[in-house]
Image 1 (cartoon, rainbow, N blue to C red):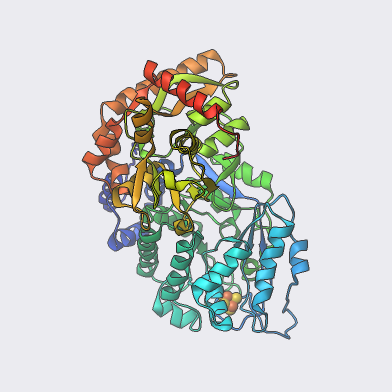
Image 2: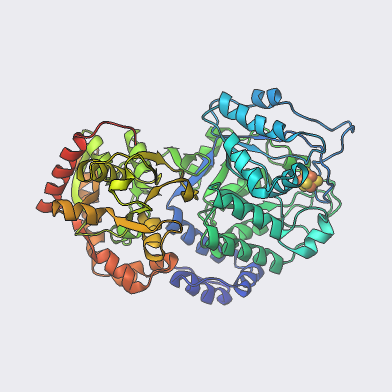
Length: 621
Ligand code: SF4
């Protein structure tokens, strides 16, 4: 994080020093940030953090909102959406009407609504089943913690049972609304009958345990204090430390409407909204994404927010009613082209995503793929991107986008390079192990031979390691297991006999152990003990069609960056080490275990691996 900031408010300097050294911000720091008028410095700090995490990527999704009914047993003070049965504005949608609102081109449906007094449990399950059946490409994000808690009480299930049944019916992730602000004082004032922070966290943590990632929100700009806002963020940060299951944080600006809480038309100011985004990015250091929800912010403010800490634009949001009933002044739907234009105008890469934030396509040229793991930091720490844009992306997804011609240069997974070598040109740099790797790990309850016929959960991120695992299982140990892809984000590992994890996740669990699994195998050690060779996990490559001069320039940038990085493992790994909970010495030792240059032994290892791979049955992995 090298951007220099000229602080007008000197009280922000110690906060920036903390951020730069990876020290966590406190309640007092959050209050200082909200109290400061130096919005440009706050925004710049947040943008620097955003770039370190997300590079130039800004995510959006083609989505549709469905609010199946506005009839609700509650009457929260700030809610202009809910009504009672029999009133002229009350509505109820049938499953047929819901299906009618969906089209196959969207990737996410977002379902939330009123707490209906009479609907049966089966109606909700059938709604999800029918969506999955009729639109297999649409992932379902549905039901807030308030709704889940309502279902549990009404239908006499535990919260876990509700979630298990919804997951079986097709639920993939959950929205984050419901608790508004985690403050008992505000709850009593504005939504006395609604769940408080404890139940909200119980539901979300239960979902994470079951492998259902969730989102989180804050409703701000009504009666909450600054301390309550910051405390809300700290509670979320603590829960994320525990489960890692939150995908994004969405500050929702309060829409006064006819609620009587604030005079109609008295919206939060653009400065307040931007500050909220920036402070969220700075406080929530363990959240992957911060969303600029244009429906409430307006598209103009959302667009500026992309340089104030937000890396997520939500999406096209067809059919939104809740915010608009409360007076949101944004258009009801934003077309895909318009979202892309807004993101490009902010100087970012528009990244169309799925419900788990996996990139599906990029709308940008000159993109460098960056593997976001500690082992590739030596390449990227001093990287001069020049006219290129940086896209942090897991190895498997980088391969998929490269196949669509959307990545120009990157550290490609070896398996993807081998598949695409007619389009890619290899540069003489790589990520190769010497003997062990520590971050491509099989966690198991069975020895290798006993894995025959068992089910192994495979990280969504891997392209090469999964092939190495197959080679080891079938060629070294003579067994065949069933490999099942997990989704990105949290998973329920207990569903599997063994799991293959890679990157920082594997490194962390290798240090602390993975609950429920007694044995840990390092795949590079297994390979080395068998072949007496290093293993090459990734190689640098550029598009063959790129002009020679540009290829040469890139090669020189990568070489220079690597040389600087290799000379300074301690300083380049100190921040990532803190984030991963590693001691600095452990991080340095980890990096020293790699060879970053493609020598003769590495080339020989690639040849041996390719030969073994070609003798395996072709399967989609
Ligand atoms: S906020 Fe939700 S629970 Fe409260 S009245 Fe509105 S729809 Fe019902």
